[in-house]
Image (cartoon, rainbow, N blue to C red; front, side, top):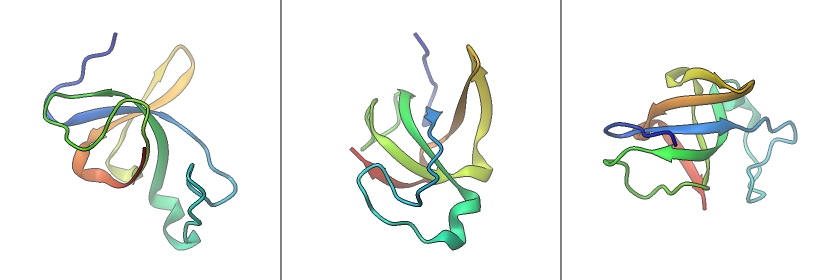
Length: 86
């Protein structure tokens, strides 16, 4: 079990080549370089409005990359979230 602190969360990175969110929202290609997509797998106690299992789009440059069992994850603060697809 992964336990995050404060307002941090961890997502399993999802690579989206089609330019849309998990809910089908088309994303502008201009900001795609700095956007990360992932499924939330752990949240800290101060995180609000986000649940484990949600798909989020976040500011990629604020994320710390972590590899767990060969799978790419990102850890970042909740204010870096741009969009939640629950």
